[in-house]
Figure 1 (tube, rainbow, N blue to C red):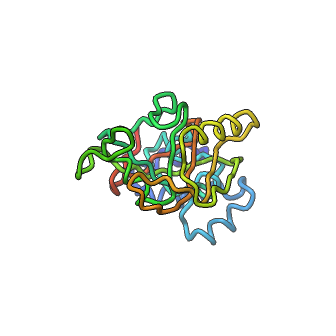
Figure 2: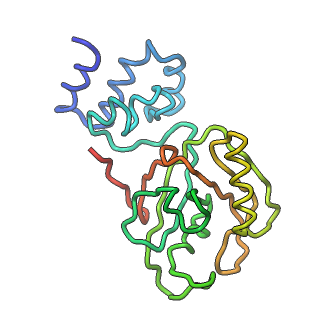
Length: 212
């Protein structure tokens, strides 16, 4: 019986965690360094550890319906949107800076973008949309230290174009003020223009179910 068939048979009898363990057992001889990763991660195997096969969107993870697992090397970040139920973060439909989806490592900053605004001012006391949590899978970002400056749209657009032109896969802005309420709370912002580098994992702190 080949290795894929063993996993397919195990799907009916094992939990997702047990399937991950079985898969790692089968894959370890063929994935360099997986043994060391398993020891360090205590059985929590991310996409990088198994060459993408175990990810919810990978050829095996997708086929056996695994829930999304934390990814080794991924960056966890937050995206606030005034639209409720939005799970398709398409850069072409971006409202803030054209052709890019923006995230922050600071959930307090991202949360402010859940509120409807007009001319940069928050209109209501209650949020209209959602706070999304994602794993960002970029590998070659252009990084800029904003030194506490405000993330002004025209400047961000120029930096974004520079990052794309030079072949980077993301733009990272450190020590940037992306707040709306003038609290000047700093964080690191991330611009992504390839939707394949975005893996949504939570909506309003509740896990998003993987698509079958």
